[in-house]
Length: 195
Image (cartoon, rainbow, N blue to C red; front, side, top):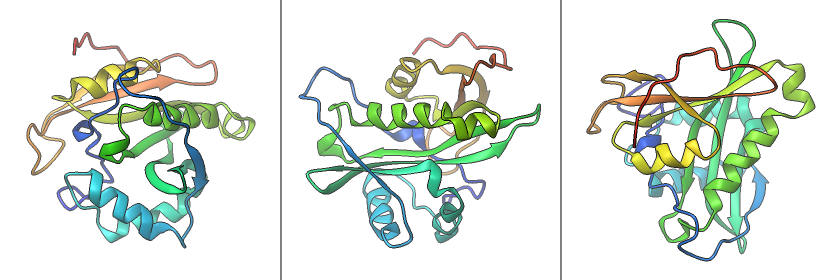
């Protein structure tokens, strides 16, 4: 839910994801998102995203605290991941990655990888298996080759291109990336996109 779009979309394609191996890897301490630290998340998002999220985005996050994590290094908030649980059209549930952010000075240090691994592990938990979580998906701006390569390392596949998905961001098009979970197959055709 950004000012440019009210559907809860995330400009993930605008993030510069890390290229591991260039700088010394750091270990994140993961913390829960709560109503008390929501202000810190707002500041982090303002510093890392090219769009401003509406207040409703943060109000809605209260429903998804179990699928959000804050990443701290030396007691400083340096990153976050916010996801939501959704019903899938063809049955079961999906986790949608709404946002993944890392402060610029901390990029290329394996921090985004730790947050993605956290949600992969969460999706495979007994609780998520009982909820019938079948996939994780996200949107990535078509121009962000680094993000496409990053998510592919975790088994995500490009399954769709959506034209004019973003507003006031150029290019406005995105790819949908999906990763099947818990023994399920990918229910979508894979597109052959070379970043």
